[in-house]
Image: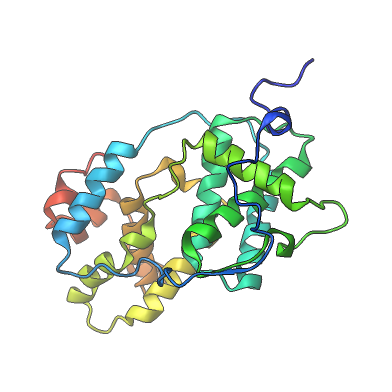
Length: 262
């Protein structure tokens, strides 16, 4: 049986790297990058409502390709481990995993192509770092092992393939855009909430859950709301995360009410 027409290996043979930066094998330090999107406040109702509208317009349900859950878990573990090694923001790893899952909605990787899963992981994290980080490692600095050694030009080709597959739509809306907003709502009722601690818990929990769930299949504001509620609870029994309970917490938000059925 021939290789599927949307196989990563097949596309990699034909992609041109001419539109990618040939110098990105060196560490890049950028002065234009800020800290992650923990910037919304309780007064940003219009901004968040507009963000939700944009998210709804972009959202699409795609049938997933057949990918081994164990292969996906190995890939995500590598992304999370490498995030820690480089000191990347939580958001960077989340975006890399989102690129990874979105790519697999549209392209095929065979069960025997373990090398392709690792290569995709490296390229997704590299792209996410270029989008989010102030200090961006060179491609040769990403950790490799004896089984998987990829030259920078191969990683660049894969980056270009990801960009073209995702139609160059790399500015993703993520739960991190909403965390401070929902935290402000929750802290109105519970003044003992430590905002920094809840933000850290929310970020850690979100990355841990990516091993089990592809969040590209869900509205990001819903993911943010649920994650923040869980992170603000002192024990797991403090809150029942039913649809009704979430509605009770956030039903006073006008745009939430209009999106209850998403």
